[in-house]
Length: 74
Image (cartoon, rainbow, N blue to C red; front, side):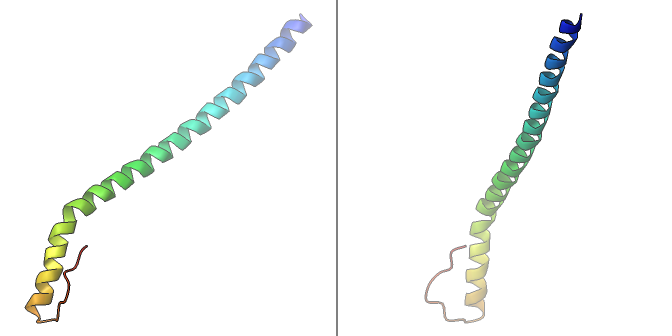
């Protein structure tokens, strides 16, 4: 009987360690996916707004007769 309890304690310790490892991995995966989603969203936003913003800056410089030797690239 004593041998059965000792073996069960080993399994319980292994199960607890395994659960902690999986839990920490899940939290890290959540943060990784969250940061990746933010990066992709910001990249998409910049791609969408780059051309209109570039045109706006160039138009503002031309409207105020600012010497513009080169075009801006946002």
